[in-house]
Image (cartoon, rainbow, N blue to C red; front, side):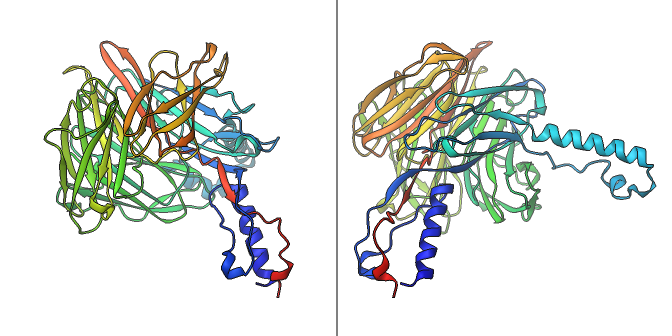
Length: 520
């Protein structure tokens, strides 16, 4: 190994420590002819999050929340800032006039320039900025003008940085409680459970955090395979902007259950589906975990009146999914739904009824030998006929180390945890409140194959909302979700968010050994 190769390894290691978007392995000991040190785990030093535009309703009331847990070994300095993404989906009506501006008088040009500068300054002003780790901050926005947000965190605020937006819509299409955790940019997303039916108004929200345009393809798959789309290819998302795309405008086919596949040709975006129903309210549908032969959908509410599973397998292979419910007593097989047949490349939907029957539950889906990858999500209804509300739970990724849910309240918050393969011990910390309170911590044991709705801690002297941080101590894997619920006019408003790992730590190889013997 020469000096150039060593420099590349050192550069990649530094990049992993700074961004948290990559893990770097130590050189292979046998190939190097020298034993290397074990990888160290260090706090991420820079990360980014994207929040979609909350609502198009004038009756919407949105709360944004930002939080970073206290992390041992994190840098002593840093920032975590969320700013409005410039809405560039519609052209400026004065764009042509600005381009031709030679006929304007100098005074008029200067005045317009001043207005534009003031507008840019307002757009660049932070919506949320953290002051210290361990204490969440929040901001409120009303109506349809609440913006999509683009944010970055570095230093002591980067490790475990989490953001959430929660919106209450009092009436109209999509009325109810809508919540979504802000997510990192990526290049591919799967959304089983969307719809192009007349009763639904579903948007795919694309947010570009970068200074160059992103180009995106949107593929739709229905019950008979891929749907013919008219403008789904080559969608341009302008730099640092958000683009909502109405799914029903991409195809003439009306289908109740659709799987959306977002593929980014160039650049990267954040993506989430906002599913709005005329009768049963609406919520956000986050992306499913990557296609896999084993999926877990955590935290189906125990009082769910109807559970509809939507699943899709890419490619041509069919698969018979084994279905089990992780209940408080262990894994059980739902009567009449022991296996579900999926045809390759076709979206399938299954009504599972009142699946949980008054107990906490999570779905565990398994393909034979794990050989055929699948994506899946469930749509859940709560409430009685005529006063029902809906929410979505996609297949989730496990909590590897730590995850956080925001916007919690002393009442109406349910934390659901499942360990489908083996027992686990977890630690749950309730942060200080946005307006005051003292953090509290509890530990819990989750039995193998079970789901438990745990009585999560609440900050002493709580004022405002607070964060719940779940850390794995032993066992696993562990999956979790958080439900927020309230009742308005007899309708059970609710929203469910799975807790993804916060990716707050990164593995960095130990470079402390003397490598001079390798420089030949």
